[in-house]
Image (cartoon, rainbow, N blue to C red; front, side):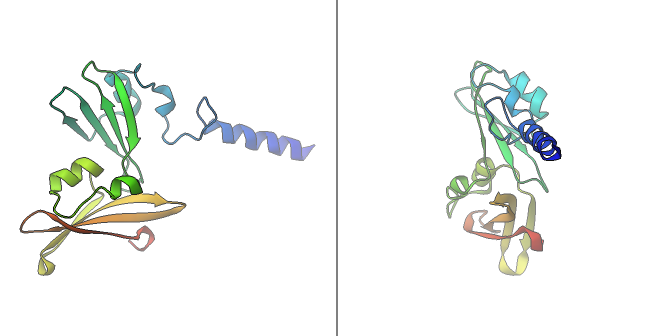
Length: 165
């Protein structure tokens, strides 16, 4: 009998972290938003004030929500020109990291990945390094973009273990 009670309690706790379809909730509040239905106001009510808002020429707005410096997610919500939630996605993924290319400007990288966790300058190397904390499996990692300080262009990327920082 105690095993059944323990199993029931574990099942209830597991479901508490799931959305209406039983999938794990990536960020609390996302289950309250519906693409094509929710408004920008709904997104701001659930997520709060965005750290950055990017405006596109066609009237689309991108709202970015970094969950750092210790968080491992940066959410970007696309609001169409009519003010409805078109889509949202997690920016700190290997797919997005692979889009960072040598020669990109600081603004291009910032727009792609959101606000970095930290920025460090290494004057003797003429290098500035931005990093973002992300999750790889169960391990926290850092994705780093190295910029030439004189040109402001990306020279390379690297990753490192976040537990050593």
